[in-house]
Image (tube, rainbow over all chains, first blue to last red; front, side, top):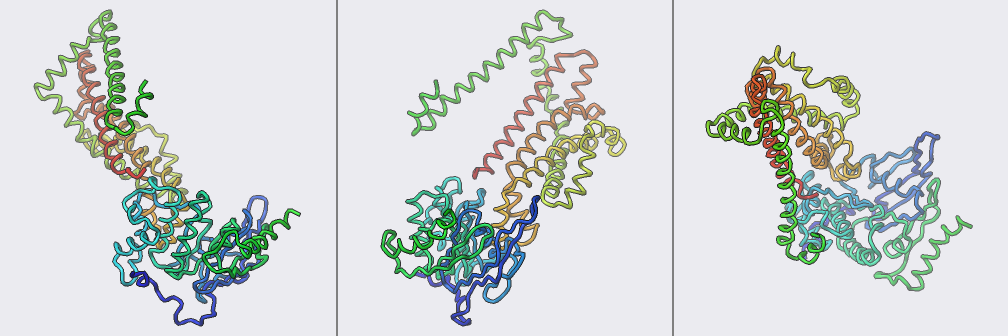
Length: 268
Length: 265
């Protein structure tokens, strides 16, 4: 199909080994009534072009803080976020975001939600706005729901719209903050398959925050393991298993156990 | 009861709906009939000049409809009711959105509003007279003040209650200016509260309209007061009922528009 049309060649013209996202010594300290609270400390993460990287950690480990800092919704107290070498401090067209609770605009239809960003910046080259909306809804399998309102959709469908909305303006990077945290297990499994096929088709760089270890192992090229209070990177694990991955295979279980070991230690 | 019928007719909403609706209508008509009966019974044991009987009131209404006076009075009242309501609501919404959105506006405009708010709308009547005179504009001014405050507070709370995540989504999808966010996220999100404010104001405005016409501005309220001065209580009651009907009509109309515009809820 014309799937490749919307693909901007973000990777071209740069050294292949230069990271697309680079976090350099990120720290974040909040001020609260009981004094300063250190949410994350000294976080260094590199994410390559077209890579799928998950950040896993227990609740309150500061992984959402990292998401918000990369997104530009919050500023870091220390360090810098570089996207393609350029330091960023606010949301930009290079990063699409998918939130934990779908955060759809309830007053807009499915198509209206997807077209929101296009109304601001116009459709990517080679598309009209309508074509782009149609294409993105097709990617998430919701073309026939274009005129429905969010209240008429299931949780899984709403998350799909959220993904389509983020993809519409064709950002090279997709940031996802526990996007499947509140959908049931079966829906989650099919959303995983869909996300991987979207990733393959669009070749986005995906940075995926989750507390679900199995989800991280199933989806990611690499897993960044976070400890809590303050959040800091304790390990980066490569997942060298061919896709589609068998969730009960030996190497899958082994890597899962490896990630899990970091959290079991904390309770020992 | 109706509850046992509804599940079976679930596939035929029209049938179940009619039954339920018929029941509601029955209760409404019954309650109104009971109200008239109690009024009538009371009037039978009370001198006519203190509490007129329903037929006397009906007679006034029929005569004024026939002569066209009723419509003339409604028209006279609408001439200050509508502009007062619309202008006051628009200014109230705009100010409320501003104060709800901006901390600076909250500290400045919000503080001034806090001082002026407790002033009863009718205390502005002297100013209405000296600034505008005993005319539609003076009465519209009083009505606008009432509409302003109600819309102001609803708009302000509507804006404060906007989901901050939706604002982040808007920013992440390249809506960068405050004005853009207000137009594309804040106002659509606050529309239910804006409607509530406007509908409440439309109701309150009928009540204050009667008082505002005390100034001597022609309309239903003035007519009602003139009649009271001559102890024509059947006329007073007749126009009390007219105001009640006008209130119901305007309320229904706004609700209709609201349900169309807020289909997404």
